[in-house]
Amino acid sequence: MITIVIGVACLIIGAAAGYMILKNVANGVYNKRLEAADKEAEVIKQNKLLEVKEKMLNKKAELEREAQQRNQKLQQNENRLKQREQTLNQKQEELNRQRLSVENEQNRLEKENHYIEAKKTELDKLQQRQRETLETLSGLSADEAKARLVESLKDEAKTEAAAYINEIVDEAKLNANAQARKIVIQTMQRVASEVAVENSVSVFHIESDEVKGRIIGREGRNIRALEAATGVEIVVDDTPEAIVISAFDPIRREICRLALHQLVADGRIHPARIEEVVAKVTKQVENEVIETGKRTTIDLGIHGLHPELVRIVGKMKYRSSYGQNLLQHARETANLCAVMAAELGLNPKKAKRAGLLHDIGKVPDEENELPHALYGAKLAEKYKEKPDICNAIGAHHDEMEMNTLLAPIVQICDAISGARPGARREIVEAYIKRLNDLEAIAMSYPGVVKTYAIQAGRELRVIVGADKMSDKETETLSNDIATKIQNEMTYPGQVKITVIREIRSVAYAK
Image (cartoon, rainbow, N blue to C red):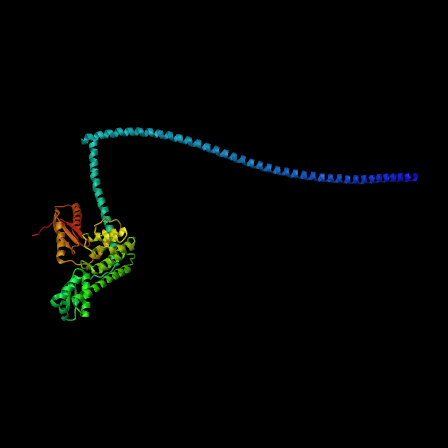
């Protein structure tokens, strides 16, 4: 028991001794580690301190650089301010000098003004004394002398102004006439047309005179039926192998001629056959009229015409004006209008269209009392032509006011086409009457001694008495005669009025 107790006690003692040893060993290890940790912490602390010191040094250097840069900028700003201050001081000094100079100049000008005022007062007194002296010498007051001077200046100014105006008018007329003549000549030179004219009769040739009896028929019934169906007059006389067809309407003459040709070729000539053939030929001629109108518009490059206007254009082929074929006249006028419009910088297509349609009022389907120009404008408006085209058609004989530049172009080209030599013919009696009327109009004015209508009535020479009329009055006379002729007479083209005033001194040596 005791042994066990002793053994247990020994074990306890041994364990305690081992614990103490282990504790000592553990304390030694702990102390070593603690010392190592302290050393390591000290090293880290030193490193951190070094880093902080380095950062502080870097920051300090950066702050010093920034401070240095700011100091430099401040120094630069200070230098600039000093320079500006110097500049301002210089400008202030300059302004002071200028102000002093201006004040000196003002003082000088004031002195000069006082001097001028004094001289002016002295001059006024001198002028007053001279005016009084002049009034005493001339016996006129200043107002009266001034009025006389103004009147003399007015007369002189009127004379100079009249001469200047006449010079300007003459120069304008010269330039305008030259330019207009150039355009008209260029237009006429670029258009060539036939000059053949038509008659109011047609001659139908037959192979033998035996056919005349068949055409006349028993008791003249065939010829009467033919005249009634066609509306013409058929003259069967002693002219060998020919029958004359007379009518003012070329379409009727053409229908009769074609009907006769078919009747003679067929051989069957009687009233019923005549009516049948005339009806057939009339239809053929109507188709030919439409085809002619279409071909004319295609040749001239005119598109979009109303079918009825195309038919009217085709009818112009069988109409004439003063012996001039109306379709040829319309084609020629259209080409002239296109050329003249191109010369003037206008639309040549519109001008050509207006030129072709300007005489459609001469081929009416029904009788009317309107002039052909106004009736043509009415037809064009009816068939939806544009207002400027309608105005050009209606105004080409001055029966309507001209609203566009197309109207005078159509009027001029119509006159060119109708007035050229060989284009138209007049009855001799009408021609002589027109010349006599021209001379009579001129002779109706006082102071006119003699008149001569020359160049086929295209120029009127008027001789006036030198003792009855002045040079200025001759200009007025020529304008008055031209206006009266234009208002009272109808004539192709234009009439030139030349007034001649001359002084002749005659002496005889014996």
